[in-house]
Length: 497
Image 1: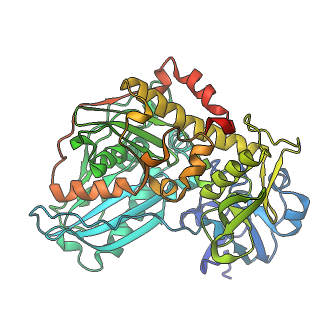
Image 2: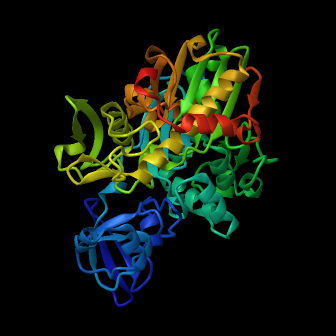
Image 3: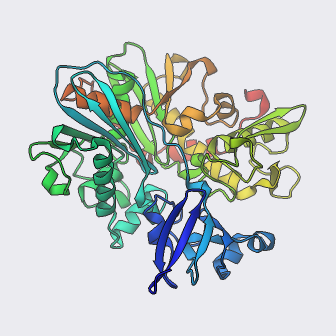
């Protein structure tokens, strides 16, 4: 320990940080991509850490979130912690695998190296490409350091409008990401393409996010944002082009545009849908004759954010749940004892509860206890189920309204592509059971990281592939949205399956 600070060791990440004695841990943990879902207000409990060595005083916020036995076991809120002595903290819930894209793409005659970046609200995925061959030469993934300001886009907007610098922190991380990818070949990089939702687009570019803070969520800065390496202080050739691709409207950003490109929506004769089940849910439906798209505030529930015992898909997380003869059977990552639940496990658990009758269609726990046991010490609280209801209702209602806009029904679609990490790992049967997706099972396919794949296609093609007219629909301005949202809040009855 130095005279000015105390040393904090984070396990099982094997990372050490030093913080001023008595200072908040937030900034030090944020540098490692740790999330503070409620913007470090101490309300959600999503940043819990367990003291393995040393001591942290119990705060009033800790007492509001943790039960007495949890406090005795060393659980504290990282956002409220002010260490006075060296500590060892267990924080495995922040370790996660970030979904990338391993697809081989066709080269289009370009030369040099290029980098494609998917700047997500929660995660960042970047790949370096040999543009002559289309081969992926390297991959880097990170958690978005802006998570220190909150887990969803509205929290980030609020933080930026309150004076928080969310631009520098992400530019600096991406600078290091590029250095890691290039591994001494920085001068060979000819172009960098970034995609992300509208808030990520604006925060990276240093644009004013105030228009995105209120209805109608319309901003004048939707176009491609271009930079020189000097603008960003990135160690790349002076003539290297850096472009953040265009947004479509509201919170429908360059990521859903890239997703359309990735699944070939603009060239499809058949009507298809793309649903990105991330923190900022985005939906597109269309074909070569036209596309409609929208964004909807699903929040972090699909990633188990703000769920009392929610955690990342790491050792100890319940990832899958099934029902066998009315008994809950849980799969735990790493074969360890269950200590939390990740997004796919959350959806499975609620689906199993609905099928067993332990959870009612209203979302209430049937026995009136407001607690639904999953496995071992892991339980879902009534408030957790409500958060999942809100998230699934946001997606389901948006999907139905866009179908109506196209004059179509789910059975008219030839494919529904689920993008993003949650869409890749969730059991589709469970998603249907809770009413997240109201469509035939055979239409639904996991599509992986379509934003990153689309960014690579844009990088290799040097220009945006031809797309038909794209209409952005503001759900907030749709007179039927609130009614549809309310209708989608309840879970389907068994006979509805």
